[in-house]
Image 1: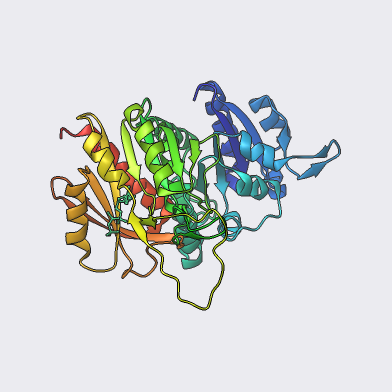
Image 2 (image 1 turned 180 degrees about the horizontal axis):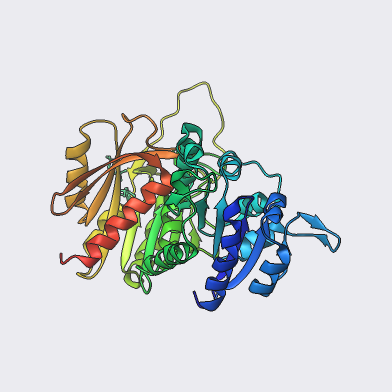
Length: 399
Ligand code: CTP
């Protein structure tokens, strides 16, 4: 926790008194802690206690006598945000993007991992609405610190107690040590579509948005990797502090950038939807409309993954994608071999919610030992985690 910046959001639950212990534990481990409170949290614990323990100003309003408290800055400042205790009300608001207090405003602006430690009565905890909100929050990439079983404020005994501060601390600690799994590794990721020029105003492209590639880059970054992203003209790109970004337009430019970067990386993940054909000639001036039909001659682009697969050294790992509409498994297996990949991520357009533009994806990972792993339909963030987990597993087991 040394030098880690922790943003602690406290909401109105009796368990709020334990937040003081949590602040103390984080500070003791060398973290810098800033505390945010909802108005009702102040009924359970005073800002003065928390300011004294954290040695920092406590924020409980978006604006105060001193002026406007910049929740965006707070959200960007933190290495981790922890909402503890998180009431059923706050979980519902977080799951739905509501923003009527400073904890929620900072949550919506946070770029760091967010942990929620719920606290409520057992019936509130098991209510389907609460469970659905928890599911939603997890699907957004937030981390749930499991509730504990025990005596509750109502006098009932069951699940719903906020995790003990020591357990919250070790949960967050575990996350950070896990996040170092790829420290020292440099990873090349390709993402987005390519645009093949026909003339100065027209091109041949595809529907790739860059969402999957961006999610992979962010996940790699959170695991400690140094990432270089070669992206075509994608709608989605990660922040520039998360990866070195090389923007290209055509398949040819992407090929050159990747061949240039490949000797510097340990891993290459080919998530781009690269055009297979490009116009044989690019008109230097706008092609004019005539009464006749127009025939465009296309030539093959170079296969980037295949070339990197050929150049691959023994200590390098390569991961490819296969987006298929039919004969999915056999096509993916052929590509795995042809491109000398370590594993291939297959997604089928036959699966609802998979492929371009969606926020979700459904994948099957096939590796070079012919192990086949099928996954459920998940958000692209969760899919990125599964892919990176597979990579980490592959690196830690003898090949
Ligand atoms: N790929 C690449 N360079 C190309 C074409 C594809 O690097 N010129 C990569 C993709 O990023 C992906 C994998 O190769 O990781 C498979 O891409 P895909 O388009 O599914 O396969 P192709 O080999 O192009 O075959 P086809 O389009 O006929 O299915």
